[in-house]
Amino acid sequence: MKKSLTILLALALLLPSVIFGSAADLTEVPAEAPAITAQAGETVDLTGYAYVSDGTSTPLSEYSWSSEDCEITGSNQVTVAEKGVYCLTGEKEGKQIRVYIVAAEEGDEDFVLYEEDFDEFTAEEQAEYTKLSGNFTVADGKMTLTPGTIVLLPEFLGDFGNYRIDVTGTMLSATEGTRWSSVMFRVQNSLRPYYQMCVRQTATASNGVEFAEMTPASQWSVTNTASFTEAISSAKSYTFTVKAYGNIVEESINGQVLIYAENADKYDTGRIGVQTNGSTLAVDSIRVCLQLSKPERAPSNSVFADTRDPESNLNTTPAIMSYINSARRPTKKIFR
Image 1 (cartoon, one colour):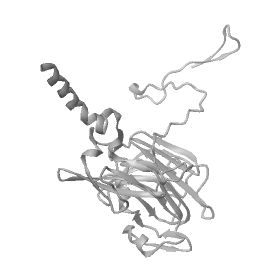
Image 2: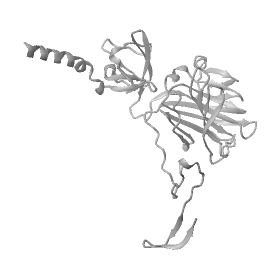
Image 3: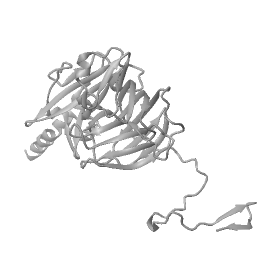
């Protein structure tokens, strides 16, 4: 009898994992990237995923799901008919979360969250933008921001923090060379604080490109700077790219990586925007994709050894260099 009860108890404990899969078997959907990727036409089984927030993993099967974008069957099955972004709302014990299914066509390299080229920009689409200052107009396939303008993209993008942002456009003018345009990301509280990629008109300056934080106290904290190969020309179009993943931020212009920062650890998610400071920017297109992996730091091309001692606070620590004439012995020519 005891043996039978033991077997029944073991089966009872095993049953939930048989039905829903053990926690270890579930694919994690992190709060900073609350998306399930899929192919157009695919049926997604929500019971195979778990939502992870603040270190706590909760199977999606424990939520009640609804959506205005797609149909969810009683068994938590979602079929996405075509490429696009589908928002699902889950409720458990009075609390709600949002999870997105991002579907791509077969062969697509990216899972696109948002894409706009302003060729057919409707009034409804413009209403999804939030203008915080200045002014912008849309005409002839471009969104033009006058100096002192801040505009945020559709609000749902604020549910994400691991994303790639590509803004392609032309800085038509600047009041002087230090003035700039920027790509804002992980914007909090609909205004500040936030991070940004700042590009000055004189991008060749040592701080021509910056990774900066607008702090809660409305102060700039610039932690990383770099210079581009040329000043930003009013006759040329450039693509400004931000890749954000966890605490990693990579910034590039036309594919040339300029900044790799590892200190973006204050804000996990937030809205995306474009800003002008003493400049006029004509934006040709904006594209936001899921950033599914950490950007890797490019290997150094330096042929010199790094002899700095971070603990000494010395900029130039003592070093000895010697020319090598053969594998057997160095010359006597030594520099200190």
